[in-house]
Length: 464
Image 1: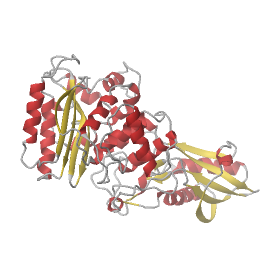
Image 2: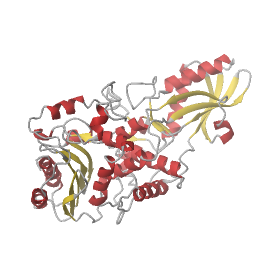
Image 3: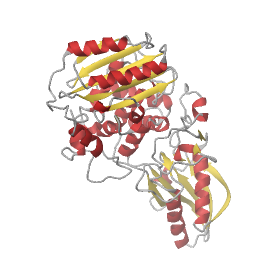
Image 4: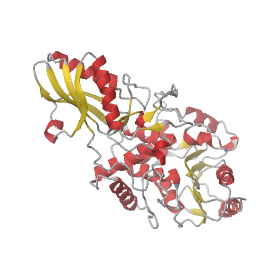
């Protein structure tokens, strides 16, 4: 726990079972070796006793000093707790505030405790009608919004399943039957008709921050235009292109192009349809399939990228798994229900979305810190733990101004909107043990000052 918060480290070292490992390193499994080396070589760490007590007086003094920061304003909530979950210091921890992307930690917890993290989201091709030389085929999506247009890419999350590979599989299967001409439709029915939370600002799509959830999409519907795509499809983007509002239709059009390149004639226009359950259950009718990255990889991607679309998608998948309404409201209701089931205090919580983009969602730092404690309480949450950014090494933590002495010691999730700056996570103490923390600042007098103050405050937690 003192080395990057307990289970995640034991897991990475292959001491405990779970999703982290040193055994195989690739772009799909970002190495924790560097942060571990930084921690291990930190001469300030003198004791790895995870039960080592934290002085409440020191924690209270640090919180008090933080609250006096110029520009912070009065809409501030903060809690610090020790590794056992005992509250050390707090201010307005039960006051509901707009959380921004720290809300994603709640969605991630619900997903990690509910979904099969080793499963994938498969994109499939079915034959619905067949003649001697022609056939009707349907592209069926099951939630993969990170399809690539090329061959399936085993080294990245974005593009793990490729439309070129899928088209080649389909063309090979059809040609074996003498079929060279097809009509193409697509089935985007998995997530019902409601794809965007009611409170989501439409500007979030045009600004590149969100794509309406879909059962299939290429690169989350990003429209690069003449802009150059990054060479690493998993890179944390500093510039966001606009998003399409019809990701499934555009993915189907891209698939039609790949079918042509694979040697098939695609007749007519690409249309939307819904396959009957009898077809979906027939292995004979399914002629091709490609798989997304595993859900644990997608959840890590969601948290480290602070990916709003996938946060909403995970909420919808949780709703489907738990039998909740197949809608954005069903997603938020299922997340809240799971929080209550696992003992999280949901008093004052109101979820308008699962990503934190809506300015009507409200959380408390008490709930945030309880979720952080739960992250470390059960190995089933390993996927969510790994998704937290590591100070100086990964995710949105790379953008924060932590002191060099806490490099590799903080695991966190950030939140930033026009009137919100927030952060939650855990810190390995240089004196041994660890602390949890949660901070939300709304409507600061000086947002940049508040942003910097949080970084300074969290950096100092390591010295408690």
